[in-house]
Length: 82
Image 1 (tube, rainbow, N blue to C red):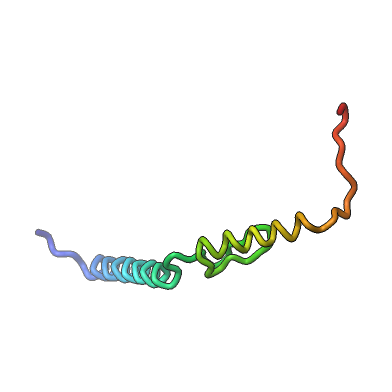
Image 2: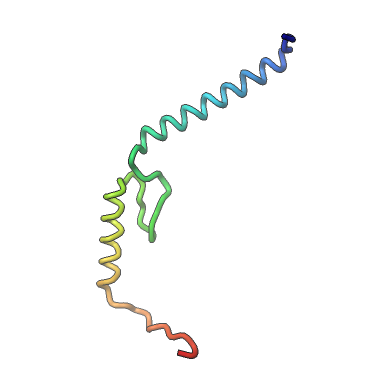
């Protein structure tokens, strides 16, 4: 087997380090957000970060109930020809 030069050895070490850091990042993220919604997710302007599926469903249902119970401030939209 041919011997690798010092440049290739450094490249392989750098690539290996990047793979390890990426793997650790994924592992830590999976542990922190196990069965939870990730950061940056919102539904209808409601932040869902860290909520479980059931909590998020309840939050969206509560929001929709509030929106549906409020009187509409805009006139009804009609389509031409109807």
